[in-house]
Length: 229
Image (cartoon, rainbow, N blue to C red; front, side, top):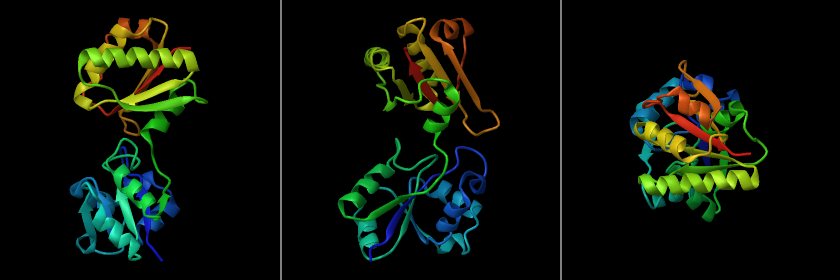
């Protein structure tokens, strides 16, 4: 029988043992091979979950293009845990390539229960939760970014759909500035920063209010949610 690829969520903040359910933790502790985005943070995570063996006895392979090695191991009956840097694997994450390769090869993929910054931000935003879209990263270049923001705002208005997107932390304030310059005053914007950390901050305000607030996000992991009803 082929092995199973387990998609393992990792903490957005705090202890790994607190971020996963008891059944998920029990599953992780049975694994000995992992495909990881970052070996150092993966080792810290595996130490925190209380693996029943020495961390140096585990086999960690850093995700690269192709994934032939992992697919061969899975086909040989070896189960593998997929570890993202933070949050849910394969969601705006390089682990998506391994999941795609596993699906193409007929390998069973099992997602474990754990934190998702996208879902947590939507839960706390107060914005439309029946219809929403995750749009990943917006363009870096200023003009292309403004155009994309206009498209998302128009789509939100047309479909009554919350638009969710993220940014590299050092460009957070540039993203916020572009949103305030581009969107209509009545459009709602939620800025959700440091989710699950003690410094967590989730605020939903009309664009007009954000303009008056002179808010600075800084380099904090942040999810942006836009709704134009």
